[in-house]
Amino acid sequence: MPRTLTRLIFTLAAALVATSAMAQQKAPDAATLAKGEYLARAGNCIACHTAREGKTFAGGLPMKTPFGTLYTSNITPDPSTGIGTWTSDQFFNMMHNGRFPDGGLVYPAMPFGSYTKVTREDSDAIYAYLRTVPPVKRINTPHDLRFPFNNRSLILGWRTLFFKEGVYKPDSTKSAEWNRGAYLVEGLGHCGMCHTAINALGGSSESQAFEGGLIPMQNWYAPSLTSNKEAGLGDWSLEEIVDYLKKGVSARGAVYGPMAEVVYNSLQYLTDDDARAMAVYLKSLAQGTSPEKAQPPLPSAETSLLVSLGKPIYDRECASCHGAAGLGMPPHYPPLAGNQSIQMVSAVNAIRMVLNGGFPPGTMGNPEPYGMPPFAHRLSDDEVAAVVTFIRTSWGNRGAPVSARQANELRAATLN
Amino acid sequence: MAARVLACASCHGAEGEGTSDVYFPRLAGKPAGYLYNQLIAFRDGRRRYPPMNYLLEFLPDAYLQKMADHFAALRPPFPAPNIPTDSKEILARGETLVKEGDARSGVPACSACHGPALGGMEPAIPGLLGLRASYISAQLGGWRYGTRTAAAPDCMQIVAGLLSEDDVKAVAAYLSSRPAPNDPSFAPRGSLPMPLECGSQPR
Image 1 (tube, helix red, strand yellow):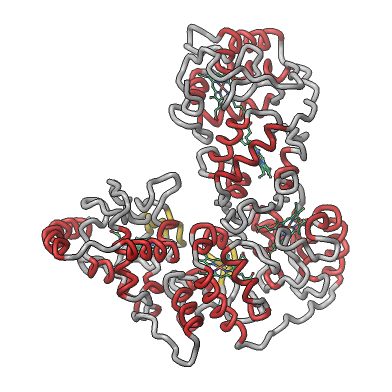
Image 2: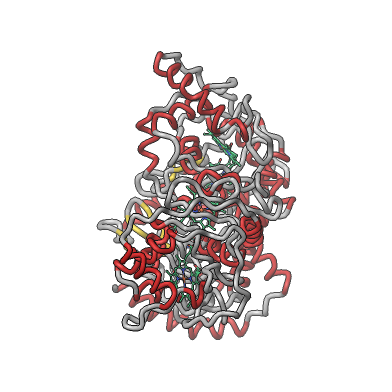
């Protein structure tokens, strides 16, 4: 492993420089540390850099990608196995440029493509905070990537196509609140990592930012945040968006799948002001577009058969919570009538909800969420297809029907 | 609480009484500390059953404690015990293991921790009656193969490791053939000898 070796030698040299550099730096004050901790939450560093039942920030979490498995790094201040010898310049260079102190290229699974928008001041606060967390000695697990993806020089290609370095530039035609929201969503929030179609190299493409996409390996669809045809946030009130982001439930829909992790580990900790700023920005993203409604599905014989099979299943299994007319009992049982998220072209999320059920995350604003039972063991593929087709096409919903084969394929999706 | 945990009902019954599926366990009346430890273990992936790991993934400790308390307090009737189909010898072997253990292979008596009446011990050792044979053997198998682990030191992993395949079959057959008491009476904390140390139940 030549890179490890050069890095080791480099780290030793850096250690000497760093100790003298650190002696000159003032100890950060309590306000800076609190800000750093808050921003680290907003960036959700903890979720990726902590393994299950592992020590906080000690890394080692496996991240499955279509190219193999990456293991996140130890970012505690341990000098030999963590980032204890890094200077704030080196830390900023990682966040902003995606480069190791020795110049080596970082895999974009570390979302520097978004973090590049973070200001130097905020990066320094996170750095200061990370220096105060308990150091953990844990040597980084080597990545397990297939050829040719194990060659880091390939990252150069990805960077040319998808990486644009640069701190967030405020748009002076917009309010301070809008700019704060944009800064958080595009930067630390790294929302585009999931909400943008993922291309073959695992990068999110700038031109399609926030247009939605199927998350590889996980089989969940992150809806587009830029148009009303998928997430449809343009029609939501600011309060509804804030509730969704902070509490995990809202009058319009509940959080589920990978989004539950984001709310649980990160968004619930946002201040009311920051959550509102995000909501203002997200709503404006969707509002610019014409609220395209999907075409009503052609009433084919097969569709009407599915719907007629689906209705009795719905009345028996679902109506007790979601209501005979699909109105739900918000916020605890989300409405299905008029719910954009189940009418998207991709039916993956609705099918998986029925197969796997779920609880919205338990948050400070909703500590004891109501749950939905899984139906994988109780409904056949035909029944799942029928009931999902029914909810996608009833009460004015205009989704397309789904087939038993689609339902069957998703039975094998990894759960967690 | 009952409405909040409807998501559990199709597998565990609305009252936590279990369902006709022999693999889905009863929850009602088990010690709250035991149930809580299981919920934490599923959430954190130490005990594996993907549908449950998934449901609990983002639920905080305090809520899992409430779920545990809820099911611990319920007392739905037990199903009739299994009519044993195994031979008298197998059942007798099971009974010996449960009550006396096996000095030769080093298996401690199950009753030394689970209580002479097998009702369990406060706060975290469950009773062994009212469980079905396939569930019991699956759990003992889970410990042997590492898909189920409890807080370290994991005494049940040691116990399960000492049992042979035949022993597992015998204890599962015997335990599932015993009628369960309708009002579970746990032995008080610290009242049983406990031949091994268990992380989930400090001596």
